[in-house]
Image (cartoon, rainbow, N blue to C red):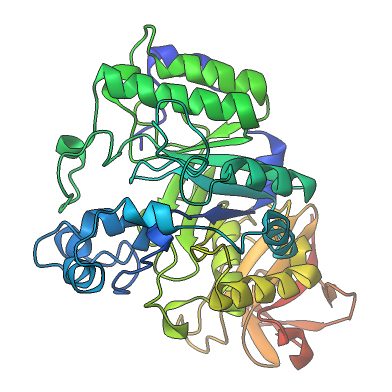
Length: 453
């Protein structure tokens, strides 16, 4: 990620206004699915950004990092792998991964119901296994082995048939098969990532192939990009971007391709959550892992209302949420994840107008609040704006105090999104609203008020 907004000279030509579809989308679905979904094992210690890196890597809660964690001496993952699989080679999981229950159309229907506007599956994660018949992989992909299907192509077709945009995740910064430097045990990735011309050509060819085959609307890189591909020259990533924007003129690129180009910044769980300006996206799993982790229970997962709160918090600060699902090896969306998405969908079907297409409300009009903030704090509150309407998304009781300027809001216009009038009154320089308890049926309630002036 960049410390500032300056792009290197070869990439300045790609600077452009962000397409409207992305700024209005607000919600996307991430998919982490791979050979790691067979063992589906990690320690559910908590969210990224809440632990020291050295502890994090040895106890990594990301199941998709299984291939790395089992190589860290003394880790619980290494002991699990030895006792459960006898220390078998990681690639054995590719051959037993069958995806026999995978139904791309059913996935897409669930994602669309949840209110998602775009879907980004992993096409190659750090284990180097490709989910399409990528060139140069010598059969180490899901078409030649395991599922024996073009999983990327099936997800792309289903996503677009359901009316959503399609993106591709590609790990360019790490590939433990193509260039294995041993296990990562700390947050310094520099000595561990491949940077040479051979790997650059390999990665360039892969991403060009994804563009040629699937014309993704989102190019989502991870960790970095090999250094040999950054300057001008025949291996420059700029040539890949030329192909991308030619195939998808309204396409967008994230900020994890190193010192090249980006259209939007990214944060992950609690790491980097201070992003507030420009175009940005927060990504996280429904649980503590992106890939399916059989060790996670309800206490580790967002439920429907929890996903709503996280989504609205991100949107209220100007970002998008890329919410991840980790399917089982068979291709089933795990029940706790499905319940979360269905709960989110129930809420979005009633309150999507407070999310999609909204902008940030001026802090001079109203400010967010939490139950433990300030004297008489009455509940969790976040604000969004749609044209001349302010939306207070809130949790509390039947009376909620809003930290808002009553002179900037038409209190007589207060209403639920179904048109039900809500009583709102000025009180001690703030606004008090009376919310029907039925408005909390699916999670936070939404009170709409017209803006004055």
